[in-house]
Amino acid sequence: MTDFAGKRAAVTGAAGGIGRAVAELLLERGAEVVAADVADFTLEGAHAVVADLATAAGRAALVEATGRCHHLVIAHGVVRPKPIADTDEQDWDAILGVNAKAAYFLCKDFGALLADGGSIVTLSSVSARSAASLEQSVYCASKAALSSITRSFAYAYAPRGIRVNTVLPGIVDTPMQQRFLEAASHARGTTPEALHEARLKLVPLGRTSPPRECAETIVWLLGPGSGYLTGQQIAADGGLTMY
Image (cartoon, rainbow, N blue to C red; front, side, top):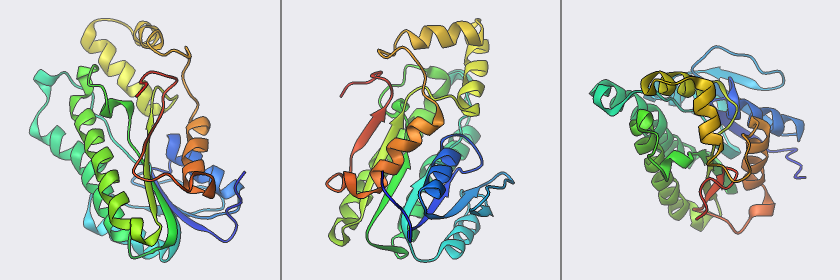
């Protein structure tokens, strides 16, 4: 178990889901945490920043609040489940703006803040590898872009010993997952429960994952135990994708 005492980390998407689980885990292990989200929230022990990271002003607020640091976790994201026929340019701009553009410029801006030997973990999705869920086609595109962004910054920061990796969660028990089930089941003329069971049949381990479990993988990627990994896509998906 890595001790993060004396380390400062910025975590986005920290109001709930995986982002909050990461922030809580880092706090438990001694890190100083600057936690950000667009929603108003509190997190005991962390410095909370409420900001829209899809905007330059929002990102600047997080940069100013964080200052010099050792770790960055980009765990925020948005999905607007819709059939392809119903998708419009506003959906594209909103989703890519949050999931890809914000991540790119956060990685860029934090380059000047991160100590040499630090680390970044982004939160992609198995949707970056599979577009089978057509109700989230734009989300899939944004997460594929995020995987590419991660590799670019892994190359850019390698000379300073800064590692940049991404985690691709599978079916995780978060509010976002529930929103997807409700929207997708409606579009397919079924129920959220039936769709959930059908999806579980595709997972070799046969279960979903709690956010804390995914957070453990992310925090491991921040620490020295993963010191020879950079530019990698780690699928925490119960075997849903095996490559």
